Image (cartoon, rainbow, N blue to C red):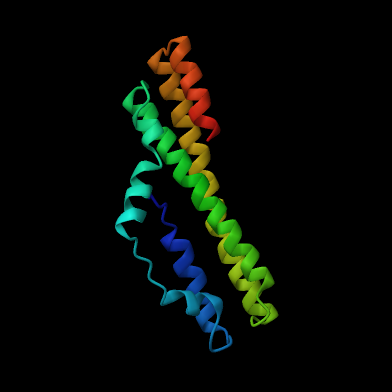
Length: 145
């Protein structure tokens, strides 16, 4: 999965958070030790999630843009879920919750900006490619997923 990194923003917010007194265990501290590994089945499913794009008759530049857009949409959905979880987290005090929601909103802004850019790149690639009617229909179907 392609990830857009917002390291500078996150590091700035993290250092500001550390300067303030916060509870010993915040949601971000708890999540810091989490490591996810995929089984062989999980890896094969992850590889095949874009197989519909790979199997299409579209040019490679358009395929790459579609994959990037899908990845960004997934990351945005994940961040929104994380934001909702922070809002529901009863263990966080008001200040810690505000700091974490601000950080997540910043990350969402970065991801949304990347999504807008990827969509512009897709539009340019489509314009430059001169797709036929069949390819345009294929692009429409893939864009909806």
